[in-house]
Image 1: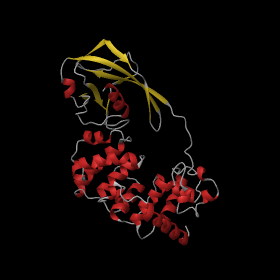
Image 2: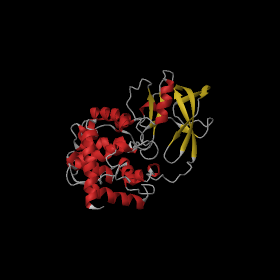
Image 3: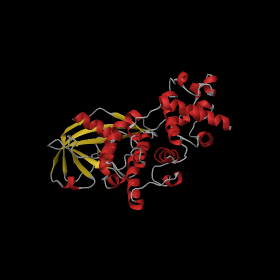
Image 4: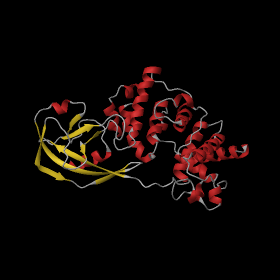
Length: 349
């Protein structure tokens, strides 16, 4: 990147930010490394408007590394329910435990050090370092990729190795030595507010005279689309098992894999194949096949057939197991719930 263009780019973005950028987001108030870190993890794959209420509830419950490290994993996942990509929450908890045990809750002050922590990639590490420590660091999140691919007409899907490497090189050359904290927020804001996925406000963009895609009339071509793949379809039967006082039986899933450590319904491959449940007698006369639903992951569709069953509980031993939980529909127990489970429980309520 020629030096004059690099200086011109950052100064235009910063001037725009001073007048039109976002200055009152919750994590911008008292921007400690902890608060910025939580926000950056939540903002991965999720829009600001969705994140704000989750962030406020999360930091109210866990205001520090120490409080998060001491939390029960189920509490953490409970506060994450609905945000999706639950590995993010598990990594937050794991990182808090690491920081508390190795550095008294303090974060590394380098991008390289931050990247050694679970769930923190290069862009997230750059954001934490720049926004909370004012360290000269570069970011390349989805908003920044969109701005750069359009401004410099970088063809191809931004996640492809060669394209991503080119974008990192450009992003690093554009990051100014001064006001790096403001520039980091500014370039993210520009992508989120002006250079949006659809209907970008190009007339309001401080870079419109430099934007190759705009001047060539090819804005819609950038960023390049991910090569399309048809998603496979899997199917499962989920048993919504309810006892005589209205509680629903949930099973805690293994720590790794789909919905790791979240609570879900017992499953089987067909409505006739009842799950193996100790100490429960299922009344076959009281069952109802509910409306099916589809849940889509990034790599496949899951077709769910819910079956509602009434049971007689012979003993309380199931409730005492770490694997099983009788869940009250008043949500008095704080656990993480898989998205379809939350939806089906709401329907029962």
